[in-house]
Amino acid sequence: MTFVQLIDCRTSRFDEMDRLMDRWVEQTKGKRTATHDVIGRDRSDRTHFVEIVEFPSYEEAMENSQLPETDRIFQEMVALCDEPPTFTDLDVVRDEQLLKATARRFYDLLAADTAELPPMDEVLAENYHDHDPANVEDNIGMDHIRREMEMWRDAFDFTFELHDQLADGDRVCNRWTWRGTQKGEFLGIPSTGRNATMTGTTIFRFGDHGKIVEGWWQYDRLGLMDQLGALEELER
Image 1 (cartoon, rainbow, N blue to C red):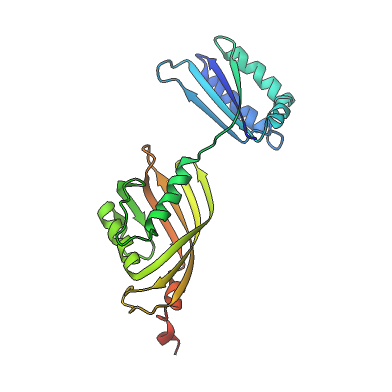
Image 2 (cartoon, rainbow, N blue to C red):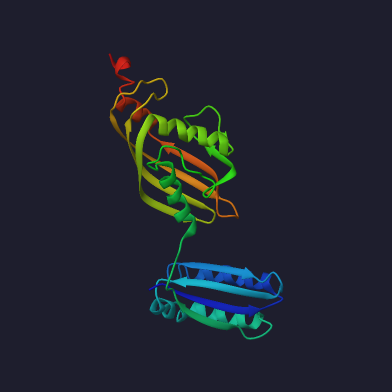
């Protein structure tokens, strides 16, 4: 079970404490069991800080605390605090990775089995900026990206299968497989009724409101065109 430790302290010497934490990260490289560390400052009290440290388990947190480097840095940290820090030990009972969930919801909406494209404003910002190397110009704004999505939906019945999602800060990287059956014209190719498969990766950047504000796509469109027979004439 994931374990989280909250360290609550007050200090007027945060810059020194920040450098101290950099030293701890360097000195415990290859030894520490902590997997994630976040420090937040209280907006109503500039001397009040809360550090959130995540571990795979309570046992591994105890291993981390027993490192001589951790003990030495902790003593120096206490000396920088205006008053003794307090500790709260938490077993994580629910862990929602909301940006990943929003990214998954994007693919569900895009591939929804409905006559019309569902509203996308629950996942996309109005000023969404789409980078697709297959397009001459980027699509910017909800209206433009909806037209792009509708082009694909008019041409194919399709699904997305998500294989991996990696989150880092405000970005989520998604590795997927697209499977579709052509039912209408696509980039000048008449409906063929053929089945096609395409793999790709999308990186989404999220805004402070939790919606997607930018996307970068990489996928095998040439392979898709080949499966639809568009390259057969060139191969003759």
